[in-house]
Amino acid sequence: MEKINLIQAVQILDNLNNQFFTVQFIKRSTNELRTMNCRKKVKKYLKYGQLNYKPIEYNLLPVFDLVKNDYRMINLRQLITLKVNGEKYLLTDNFKQYKNRLKLTAEPFKVIDI
Image (cartoon, rainbow, N blue to C red):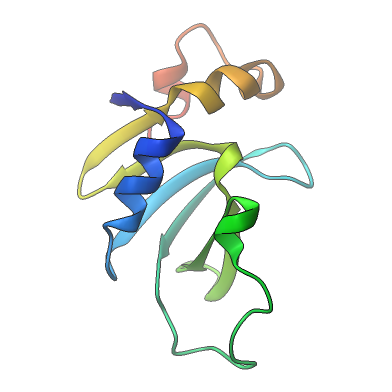
């Protein structure tokens, strides 16, 4: 698992076109670790047109959750792991910040392995 920072993660996500990817992040409402399989740029299920704001200005990434078949926003500041094209990445800055909340064992790579 390659260790990257948030800027590198955003660059990887920006280079995705309509590819599938998996993320693990801290859910804002419950502080639980959540895993999501998703895609960017899905427009098939849009109902109300465009957003009234730019999500990236709030460190949010709009995605389509493939399991729940609905749109979600991922807070990039709470992103822990990312899996794209079989490559796994650990966001070291975010992981250090949330490690105590997650109550992980001493071997984090096994716990949050995607």
